[in-house]
Length: 95
Image 1 (tube, rainbow, N blue to C red):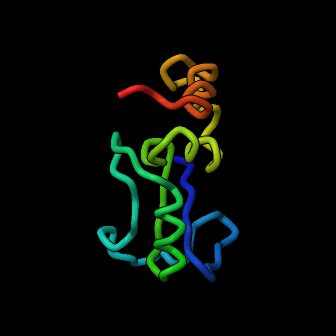
Image 2: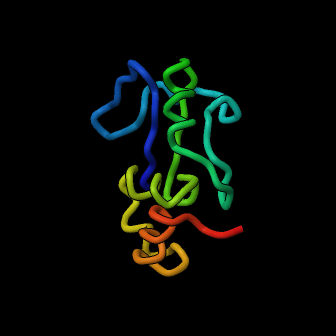
Image 3: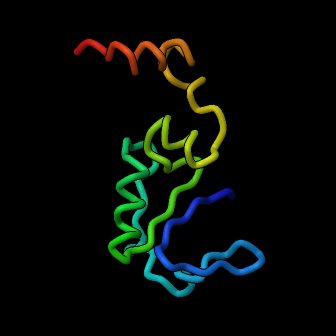
């Protein structure tokens, strides 16, 4: 599984494992719950405060976060596809 991790001052091993997560309490690692909306910037802010944070293809929180974290063209899953997302950014959504 591809995973993006945030940890300020972290070192990473050659195989891509993240040293700050070794032996870490899973409940202490920040992550958006699967199927819930969230912002990857909250995860980055958590890391700046010294708390490790992570996301994967099921827990990146929002479409822009998924794209920004490298999980593919998530805009296609937005209602109305890329065109619908552009409309949302420029005009918002009623309701």
